[in-house]
Length: 198
Image 1: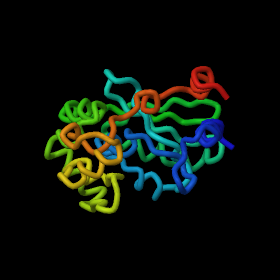
Image 2 (image 1 turned 45 degrees about the vertical axis):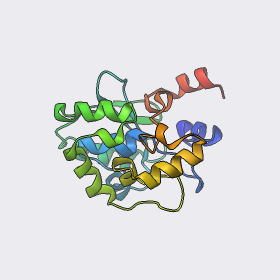
Image 3 (image 1 turned 90 degrees about the horizontal axis):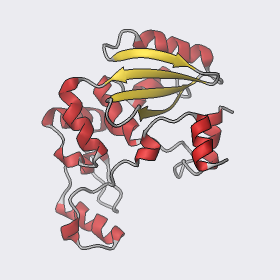
């Protein structure tokens, strides 16, 4: 098994279905470079591991592809990315392909707001892109927000979130926590093991 996937699974970075938990970069920032998780999955359902930011200030996104298990399929995807105007370069490790993209300047403010957890404060053009991808479905059953809930939180969703957190609703502005930088910023598998063990 690919070492990053193995580390993520062994350290609890999976959801209820056993899939790798997606970064906020994958969900909220990757669309800014014209790529969605679904578009990569449609290309091949198993090449994509996750997307990360390079660091907070550089405004670059790194897609991590599973080279060790799907080398040819990953190479084919990389060839298509040369047509993406935001694509910068591809670095290769023993087990991964790392695809670097520049976030367009007109989305820099949205990038900053997402990293601060200010989903509802993003621009109308940003919200339009995400609605096109994720739709306008809301979760009215419990506190867990859909993407649309994050972009357009209602008083009801704020109340659910406040009850979940055990705080007064007046303290709730956004209905999802801000991204955890330690999971969003790209780290090699060696760095992950050094910092977190295993």
